[in-house]
Length: 110
Image 1 (cartoon, helix red, strand yellow):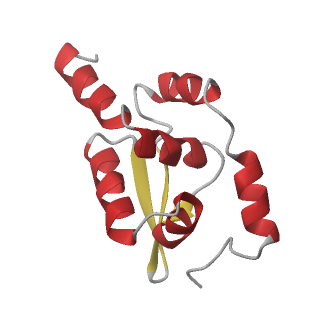
Image 2: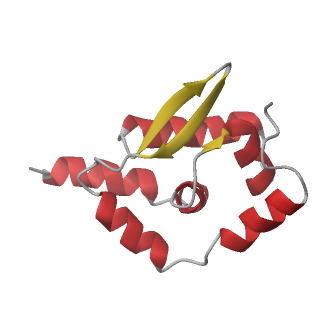
């Protein structure tokens, strides 16, 4: 069962604009850091710090594919449905991803 303290930590972790954007992208697909850098137009260290914070509360998962690590939402997390509901009320990131693919930037890490 979720405790008030756990809920507070999770809500603090997702309650930041960049992390909300990352979560919004991850509702659509999994991404590596280099792709998130391009999508968010931020530095790799900055993106990595945001990902670290989301991993701490287990909202996201990492998966190693060769030498790259891809991030995805943790569908087993007790607040997964809340996260989906929250991101459904935010501006969609699908158009950003579509243009990202069209420009040939989808897999920068290969």
